[in-house]
Length: 205
Figure 1 (cartoon, rainbow, N blue to C red):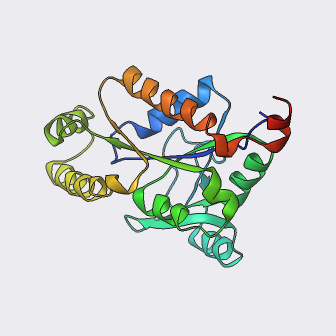
Figure 2: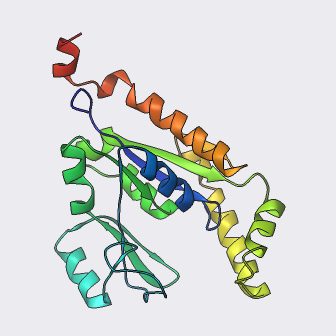
């Protein structure tokens, strides 16, 4: 790990595309730190503070924002979400790769980040459903949305998918293991990028 700079891998895609499952899958088998985001939404059954999210009040979130503690933040469905700098920068400096599950707003903020350390580490991947009908069927299988909620989710998905050309990589989703393998290949290639090789490592060749 000390022969190259760490990478910051951002994975985006519409809700239900499988991006969270992919992030969790590659974290379990590789040298990745999966960031924990902050949110002002209510904790759901089974969720744990510090493992699933850092659950903050609106006041706590606003105070952290005013102190400049967020690397990126966005408002989604009336709730605030954000990633703390302390969840990312110390890991990158220690040589540990970081993976983040972000919406298109958050990914755009990272691309526009003025911090050279973040910009040089950043790679971004968009998970595209094979087609909208298959995506609708995947969501329907959850049996968790009313028809009105399903229509809203589909409209949001269309808007999110319009941003895929802004990403460096896109994976057209299929079988989960194939998607995970595609992400592994992207990560492997980025780890071998010459610009990430540290001088100390190059001197030993």
